[in-house]
Image (tube, rainbow, N blue to C red):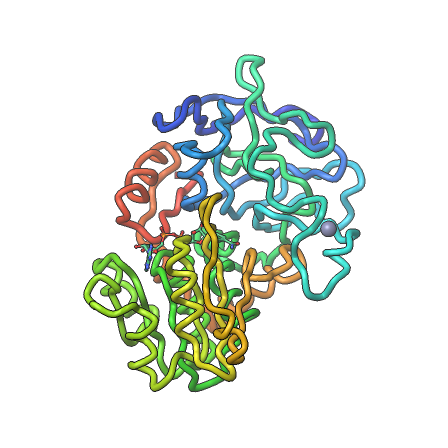
Length: 379
Ligand code: NAD
Ligand code: ZN
């Protein structure tokens, strides 16, 4: 029996209040409207951004809300005007989109779509500003246009990447966000050459994905930098060959790295969000050719301070959003890298929980115990 065009009743994990455990609720999910698709979520994973907006410290609090953005699922039905997706397609939801019509989407260099670029304060759909979720007649806010902590969700078709139906959704769901951000920062922006040295600042999921990009590029040395010594053991699995803990040195970390590498690393990728680490990541690259890429999201009042001579000496500083991948055009290719065994995703997945125990995933993430915890919607 087709559900297309009808409301669907299903379970969703609703965040009613900042920092309080999510509550399983029966919700009604409206049919997709113009340029929207309704997706049956099979696997979703928890990312730090979900935790940030659940805690809502320094963020606009918007409750009740259905969080979640890294996910893999199957299209249930499509709304008016959707021509590139149909019921049964295997898809990933993406927190930022690709409308295909704006200056950014037309540019080969940008992935910062004018229409569908990330908007953390939007609680409704772009088409009419309304929510497609309700419980007992009360609307529930969307999150990042994805809201994947629900058995069914409605997403703008520009935020949906159609992928190989053979790809296991319990693995490739992590390609939705953190994995692609770090991987793309290395492969698309830092672009190390075979044999070169790469420093990765911050060994969370994003930094480890940047290290995976360095491994795929054939980097000769991958130097991991983190304040947390517990990250180092895990990082070895990601090809990180040497470690630097800034707390164990009396000298500035840029000097430590410069001495280790006879003048500096060829590439560095910053994945911490700390402005000190951003400056260090820039100042530790080699004169003449070194490239540093910033990925971490800084605080509002941060300022990047370095001597202009560091630029004159032919160092390059770049920044990257979502690894410079265009969500619809490029993400299916990242999934193919996994299918071809070029990219290893399994080592990122440290935990799995059934949907009913989604709050345990928040505990693992808050305590820094997991890289990625998969939430199995069918278990
Ligand atoms: P995470 O918290 O899991 O990892 C960050 C790591 O950095 C931690 O291990 C921490 O100990 C380390 N760290 C913090 N300060 C440091 C310092 N001064 N020197 C060395 N190490 C330091 O976070 P994550 O999920 O891996 O995300 C990393 C960053 O990437 C965050 O700032 C996140 O907001 C950002 N991010 C950016 C994009 C983008 O598109 N640009 C997308 C997703 C996430
Ligand atoms: Zn666009």
